[in-house]
Image 1 (cartoon, rainbow over the protein chains, first blue to last red):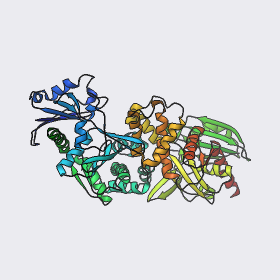
Image 2: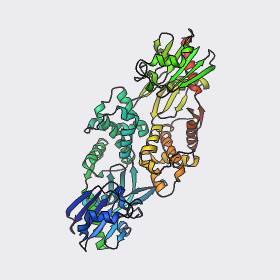
Image 3: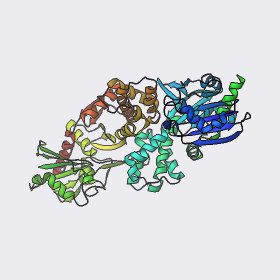
Image 4: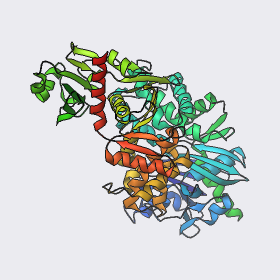
Length: 293
Length: 293
């Protein structure tokens, strides 16, 4: 029996998974790591799934920010290239053979480190679900990750602060003055217009101003302006990352992977999307690699 | 006699300038256009320099946001290419031959308009001060302007929201958590490190994350992190704009033009800097072009 826990900044999700990979039961709570005082992690885990932990044969793997400096115990980043083997080796056991924290990954490019924590499990889950040993995996979000996998190992990855930049521009910049209060439904035409302008513009620093000037000249309707801005930001991410990528695998919520699929298609790139199942599959695959080790 | 007024969003500055260009007297107030109710503009102008306006031979030229939709009267943008002649033609007279609003400039690139309002006067002032008929003029700020001048006319320009992006990242992003409360004095080494990383990174969306990861691995000292972040943002602006520019003329406050001069030098580019004198010289040169017309 595997108790899989995805313990992030603002929420805790847990699943009980059978030996064959079947997800038997799922739970979620708002006890993200920011709500847990120092020393409080074992207690909160038992609140969430103490009944499951009564099974003496249960293995519990915890991924996400619970392994960060602000979490339960710091599980040092596992350096790339890294596959199942390296990740399993680098598990930080808080209770021997029973409860382990999954470390994040680190890599280095241009003399600067990059990090992820939690997304590595989704990547390995997506690889297991697709039977893929190589490819580009994209995990859109507040801090999007572009992950290059080869020979079953994560070779390198890069972070784009896309979700965060969108929120900053949406809420706190001069653009906020001319945007409607609600984002509304995605307007595909305005979104793609933003994606394409981002390719020509060369930098969001310049392209973002177009959301203002187009409004000023009545060439962008206010209700679709959030879609246009979203296209500018995601388009900037694609301008940087998608150039050398072939088709990519998107892993994330349907709302977000849909936007990336539309943007990629507008640039002539293919994609397929996976959802939350990747997390459970990744922790299950990791547990299996421990058994066989 | 010229009464030159630079009426921006948050302040009003005025100067009395003799026929030979000598600035005889200067005044400043906090009565930016955001503090002025509709219909209140003539009154606030008279509060600021009514005594100067008693001179029946005085000409009053007002530049800046006073000519915007939120200002006194909207003075429609003058399209590029535009020189003294086009700008003089496009003046919006609120009192015939006595008081005029200077319009901003607009241009179009990649199917998207760009605008400036107030900076055009600084560019023309810098041209007059340097006797220059062509070159690249850079006006750093909340929304930096890169202005290409040829044959004495502004041919095109581009806006980068650099000052605003810095403030958003500094105050509202996840990076704010690891930055010190005060920016402190500029640390040149950290600043240049940021400028250079921005050249390699290809997008601020990715490069900005390095301010976090370098801190995480104790490879960026907290007190100099704001200088590094400033280097990332200004470096991104230069990555986009400075590629095809030769030496540039910087117009702005000494604090800001110094940063740009350091960043440009780090990329092997030369620059010279002018300050607030460019505004008065620009309005004076515009007034002279009216006399000779």
